[in-house]
Amino acid sequence: MVYGSGWSDNMEEFCCHFCGKSWAQDLFRTFCRDCGEPLLCKETVGQKEIHWEQSNPLRRYIDFLPLREIFPALDLGTGDTPLLTCPSLAEQLHLPRLYAKNESQNPTGSFKDRGTLVAVQKAHQSGISRIGTVSTGNMAASTAAFGARAGLRTFVLVKEDTGKEKLLSSAAYGPRIMRVRGDYGKLFRHSYEIGINKNIYFINSVDPMRLEGYKVTAFEIYAQMSCAAPDFVFVPVSAGGHIIGLMRAFLNLREMGHIASSPTFIGIQAEGCSPIVQAYEKGLDRVERLSGADTIAQAISNPDPPGGNIVLDMIRSGGGSLLSVSDREILSAQGQLAGQEGLFVLPASATTLAGLIKYHRNNPIGPDKSCVLILTGSGLKGLSNFSGSLGALPCYELSEIEAGIE
Ligand SMILES: Cc1ncc(COP(=O)(O)O)c(C=O)c1O
Ligand SMILES: [Zn+2]
Image 1 (cartoon, rainbow, N blue to C red):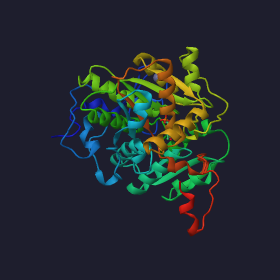
Image 2: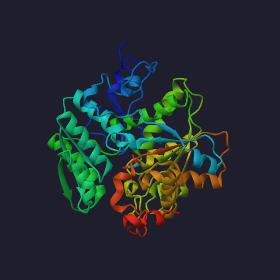
Image 3: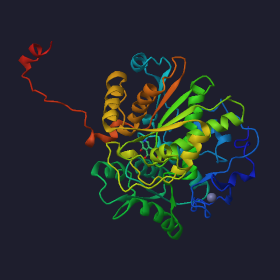
Image 4: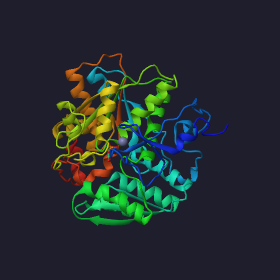
């Protein structure tokens, strides 16, 4: 079997979702030079197969990816995460077919590894020796880990006020970390100029290769549901890259005749930073940048989401929806996932359950429908601002313990 046989020559092109223009693939120029929108890998013609016999997830789905070859040594064990039932929540919500795709089981504890893996494979194939990212947390740790693994010099640009816990989770891998003053959106855009001048491939939130990596999560869900698409998928949305990748994967499966229709995607933002939801509710086709963010769900608090316009368009044309949830609803959902299902996730990830509860209240979902929550990151990554209260913890003498147990 020749891997990548489903890709024709135009796999080397990027295209613009909005103006339809194609551009030669250049990892250093990943935004449309005409309209400024993030570029996506060009979809190719030709039959694509799933190579079920492959144990490596990238090799299994390579026909759908912009890679000709896979180098397993660059991986840290990404993917093949479990699709778990949620028996307690399923009963409570009258949704017997409720599942959680636990992306916190990826090597650095978040879904970001999926995208970093594909981008680093591409960097390796392209002879690139320096990579970077602009991030405040999960993406920085993921890029730093895979950069270390691949022997690439890695640059992490962070906001000046980034917390110690987040810095440490990247610093462990030895990247060059640079704290930068000023606006995060400007830093994001400026990073591409630095990349061109200094020969650094910036694998930021909407990097086209990163998005292709996110598709593999959707293919796994399809496989784990016995070759079917779920009815609903609930995803937290910040820059927009993750949900775009997931939606593209189901479109790929539909185009290839593997599924009759795509799932209904529900994208969720936190009320304290919901620029895409606001544009959706106002009926706009362009997202308006917010001046700031105020939410417990820090991992999804991008006030100027680069993929926002594409998300709006894909959600509208795919029949999905976007909604926001409050910090109170997020914390309550975080507690439910941990206390009822044993799943301790970041507030950003708990938005999926909060969003499901809200959506289900307003648009009751039938008990025959399958729903998947994408749990994007481990709660262990946000311990310093975890507000799950320990309460007053009394301390006992050995002789008092038994009397203290009811
Ligand atoms: C834990 C977690 N969930 C969800 C997201 C949102 O992903 P995206 O920015 O691709 O929309 C992020 C992004 O950083 C994240 O860290
Ligand atoms: Zn364009």
